[in-house]
Length: 112
Image 1 (cartoon, one colour):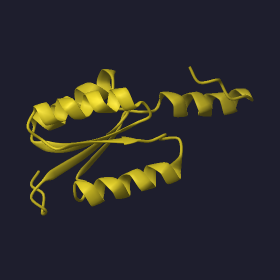
Image 2 (cartoon, helix red, strand yellow; image 1 turned 90 degrees about the horizontal axis):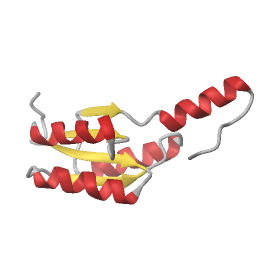
Image 3 (cartoon, helix red, strand yellow; image 1 turned 90 degrees about the vertical axis):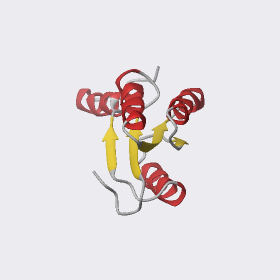
Image 4 (cartoon, one colour; image 1 turned 180 degrees about the horizontal axis):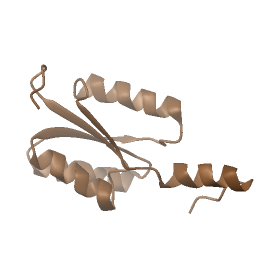
């Protein structure tokens, strides 16, 4: 993929651990600048360090992906600081899935 703005920009939600963190590393290794959206600052800092260690620009944006407005603000920040987004990968779904399942069961499970 060749971007019209000179940089390839990827956003990964939930990119601070597990499959999400591996996805962040793969995009950076493939030449993408990567924005990571997640709730924990320590994980964001680590993921951004991984991206920068691969020679790319990284941006960590504290975001609760269950909050639509917060995700919109995060996308605006990514485009403002890194440029137009080429790829968006949603890996953060555990909390959202728990909320949805809780609604199906008649209650909302507590966060861990």
